[in-house]
Picture 1 (tube, rainbow, N blue to C red):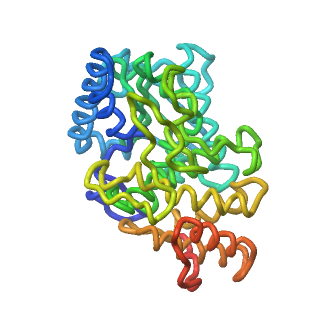
Picture 2 (picture 1 turned 120 degrees about the vertical axis):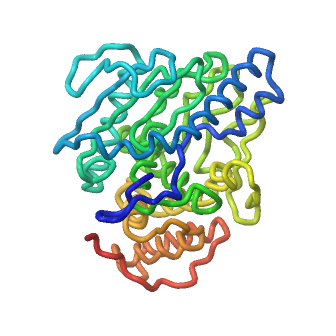
Length: 366
């Protein structure tokens, strides 16, 4: 379960775990891989289904964790078991120890916290100082990372097709952003609202990486999960916000199925109604907006998207809703008819969604 806004009851409909690697990737490995690749893919599919079944148990526990008025991280080691959180191996301020996965989980969750604190004046995931707990070395050769409602969890990858899942800063930013969505818009993890849930995490994860690398929009790679694939896989990343559908094309895992325009929207019942597939459409809308505005993408385009997520979107929002609301927020923040508002409209038009109205004001926080 999850708390939406301050003082509201948990939203039971959002009983989900958000995985960075779509289920269909492992299914393709089962179809096309070697015997060993198929075995490991089956293990991952089974582990994922077991985790979905445990969501009702773990989902409400996060409210029990204490908060802090500063960044507070705890990194746990599951020691290749599936029990959470595992053995505490590094707390806030402790010296580096435990290897690359521990250090990456520690450093990159800190980068994410500092980004939201500095750029959006947000104090951790819940805006109340929620501590950031992460578990590494989850499961055996586990090909995924996920946010389970109260903490981050990372697998080591199979070592053949996937590297460790702490290796990409934007993946960690993406998954922690699912927690922010959980506390704010509470976007249902199905269909277009679920694709928006994934897209806003891609947007924010990419912005965390761009901020750390001090990149302007035109210098960023706009890739999500760069570094996750081993060299034998023909792919650059899990997703491309710049050119959805171009991230990978491999004999075993198949071709990136993301569309970048509404004319190619995939109507499917798999992948929770295409949450990882159709998220390419709003992803490209954000990319087009950021490129038109130029400079640091988090300063204008990122602010518009964040305020929309925080104040305007609702559980069942659609792509059309997101287009209208980001346009409205751009007018509120930068002025009606401003270059920023025009860039938002152009971004959505570039993926086949026309802004119909610029009415509405950003709702005040309470």
